[in-house]
Length: 114
Image (cartoon, rainbow, N blue to C red; front, side, top):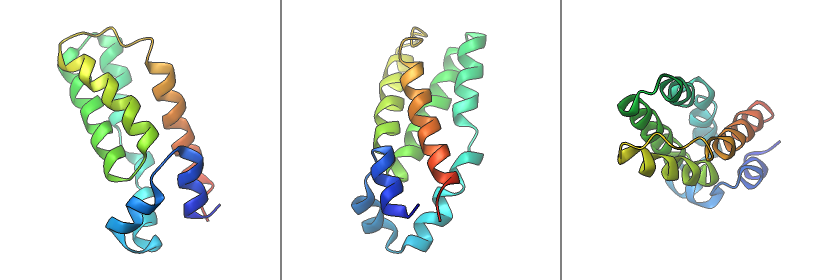
């Protein structure tokens, strides 16, 4: 799969990322590092442990990484969860399946990149 198809598939901003990173080689260098980012796993672990501050930090990190890489759909879901956690509320269980689906779509898409 090529880079533009990947971004279309995940609900990302291909034109925006190309405007910032200029070349597909540079985009791919950073995109391919995304699966190693531990913020999604840290968010799940913190929520399971009832650790509000850690959950907020992990969600905020995931949101930032997704935004920087132009993963718009993932960013929007992470931003919604971040806003709820910012207020000290751990009641995000209803939003986690959507975040997880978007996250998995990105990671699966990355593995299919040319």
